[in-house]
Length: 604
Ligand SMILES: Nc1ncnc2c1ncn2[C@@H]1O[C@H](COP(=O)(O)OP(=O)(O)OP(=O)(O)O)[C@@H](O)[C@H]1O
Figure 1 (tube, rainbow, N blue to C red):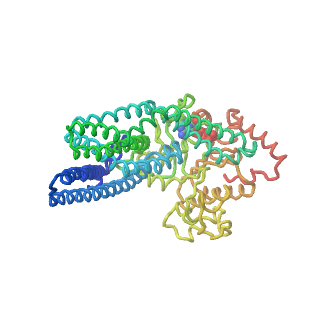
Figure 2: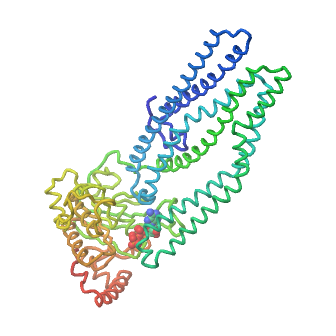
Figure 3: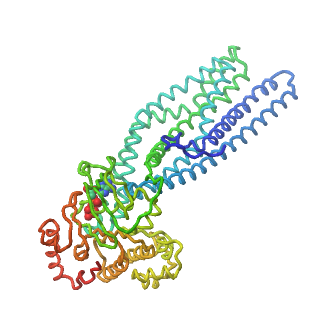
């Protein structure tokens, strides 16, 4: 019963649980044995009654039946315990296999895919959906064995004992079934509506909490609270309507699956047959003992359908992630000759999946840029021009749809990820810190760096001083739940990380906004140190910082519309000149309102 990893991306609950199918089959088989043994234990009672009611009871025979019943009880109990322990073991193993497969797969898919679906969705899949499959395997598989075996074996025993009473027993259950079907007839749609309403509440709550800062600056929070209240009302209404529509038939159905109605009818008809002299008491006893079991056996089937629905939805989402193609790795990896970057006739479209009508045009169209080693290239252009997309194609967040990106004459697709990552460093706006010490966060850039090297990098990144002021210095825990660091401080830590990495090419997404002038000055100094002597590709949001860039590439709607140096572009009177004019107007306005001028700290 060793577990097998997936050979192809799984779809559906059964395919996803396939790695532990040996254990699942084992658990089902054990629970089938347990159900049969439980019925066998009860079936030993009527012969005992026969002996006891006879004129000369055979005590030895009675003890044989008692012993057989006791053995059956022990077998039933033991196999039930083993069925559950096997299914729980399968569930734990599956959880480990799924989490490992998912994280290994996520490490190989294009980074762009991860950023597109978002960390919240990934967390839900890796945590909640895997957990729902755990519950399915741990609790449902033993149920499956029992739920289907008990009715079948009980009915066989009943029909063998007396076929007339067998039909009487069966008469009640179909009526109950009809009521249950009535209650469940639009279960799928209702459930979907219910889930949607529930999801909406979650969304609004997350939005309410995450956007609290923004929301509260516009009003006292009442408008988003009203949105929360509205989704809550909708959820309550859906639940109430669903409940009202199904409660009568649902309750009647469940009532008929209670042992009492069947037991009453079986007793009345059985007593009548006995009075007619066509039924002996021990045979009636078979029905009195087994019919409650038969009724009880149907309830797990309904619980089962809930588990199956729940795990199917999770399995589907896990299957979609596992089916995402991985980033192809080169058969014969190559190594770049120098730190130049060539963007050759590159076109790129985001997949159909993410495309909305407005996004169906290519994000980049036949873009060619030659970036010599140790030069500074700035990408500018209006919002949505394709600057971030282009910068992210260099580390293969996605692969180009057409054309090629080369580093030192080698296509990035012909390099291993390790080579690529040892040539290019990225400093993005959305700085990410692990829940770990500041030291280890910086060390991510070069795991084998010494403490002295980490501190030297932090010093160059203008981060050393504030780190020393933290409660545990370099050993202070950073990250979401760790010490609160300002945006500027977090950014300087990621710059220290890149400085430690010391890669020859730096792709930099310049911050759009700074918290305060002091932080801004420190970050600019840190960036200046990071970029000295490197090939720099900067996504520029503020034009003064790139005035002295070796080349400025102006993008608009995915096309290169202009390129050159600042002065050339200003005199060309095109889009850049326009952007510059607008910047100067804003700058004049700023000069009247701010005492510190950004230009003083321009690093490039
Ligand atoms: N993950 C994504 N999925 C689908 N479309 C995307 C995705 N990211 C960006 N786009 C689209 O690609 C185009 C280029 O976007 P991109 O973010 O590269 O522009 P940008 O110039 O960096 O803009 P900004 O200055 O606002 O950051 C836009 O139309 C955008 O809507």
